[in-house]
Length: 146
Image (cartoon, rainbow, N blue to C red; front, side, top):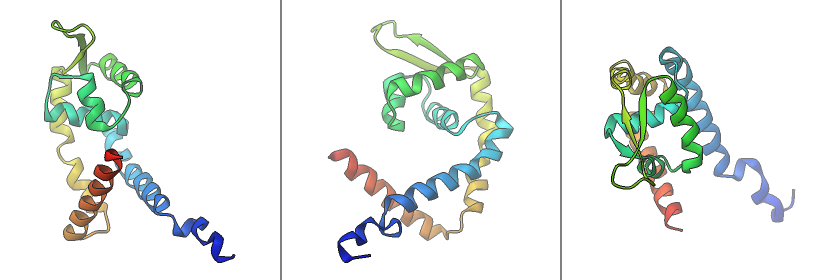
């Protein structure tokens, strides 16, 4: 392959190992989340709510960097399963306020061990994991500025 096309090699793409690592890490979550009967995106939504309950849909969308039209079906499924409630804001009907139900709050206790279980499956030292975390958030922050 000529030098002109060297940049097109899959092994020379940063996006490919990022994509593959992400997919593989999410696969490791699946057995743990299956015990909770959650998908990974549902787990992300619940983590946002466990951190701060009673938030607007837009706050969840911003935190997860997802569009509200992507989140709405997720939230509806979580509501149907009794984990959260969605209500129009009393002060501004354009806003949807999301709150955890008791069932959603109780699930937090069952999910507490997931981060440590996953960390134990990653082939990284604590220092390497911290460095990767720092670099990934650097990429995210810089990409969001553009």
